[in-house]
Image (cartoon, rainbow, N blue to C red; front, side, top):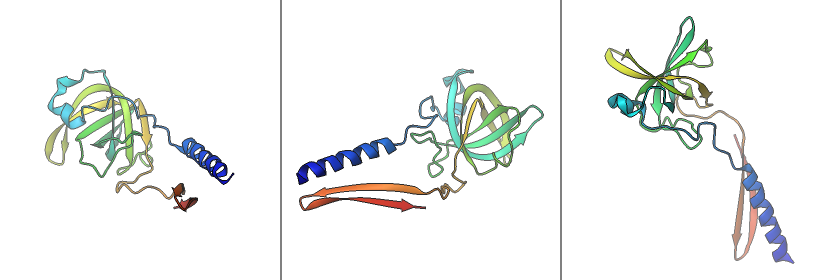
Length: 177
């Protein structure tokens, strides 16, 4: 009887954990390669109008009369489509959004992911150096909770652990902030 109770408990815990599994984010699918740096080096590798998904850290915001340009230092995306600011940067790109974006929301240092069609290239500068930016139509934007240092916000997290051995088993629950 004890074995059946343990089996039922284990099955319930596994079902609970399966229900808590996070689904991939809205940017989990889609073309992420080549990186902005690789695309700038080989511009004919992607046709104008092709959809790309890139992400990174905002380094400049320019509100123009009819649109907003975000200059982004690109980083690789994780499985949810979130940029990893601890990885090596992958060049820069411009996200061209039709309309106004609030600079306080889209401020320097915020991480974001952008998906949209490749519009072409724009010449510019990074410091005193000339730079050729690939430009994406910012059709889909997602701001992430991470700051420029990669630290997450203080949202509480709950973890569940299960252990089974020859001497019994146990279930543990932890809450972190």
